[in-house]
Image (cartoon, rainbow, N blue to C red):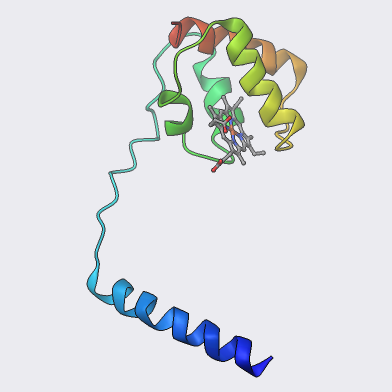
Length: 101
Ligand code: HEC
């Protein structure tokens, strides 16, 4: 156990040094309001931004309704997004219009 601790410490030391000297500048948080205007934008913001920035959406390859349905379904089924079937429909319509191929 102690050996593991020592190894972890030794490994962490250069990391700590690196953290001290290295600065990174994050891009400005463009997320809020970054979604394109259009019907369904509000519901999309509300449903999708509870977990992550809308950058996730904006930076995706554009897609048709089938692709966006797969994305939204994944958010619901895999990540547990609380989105009603009506909202899901409105969101997919919005995304496939605003972020069409
Ligand atoms: C319950 C939380 C939650 C909600 C709500 C949510 N997402 Fe996600 N989303 C995630 C997680 C977790 C990831 C994966 C993050 C990572 O890989 O760093 C993700 C990733 C994504 C990605 C990146 C591609 C991918 O498949 O990983 C897209 C696009 C996306 N979400 C779109 C949406 C859209 C559109 C909505 C609204 C309908 C939404 N998300 C709502 C949790 C959520």
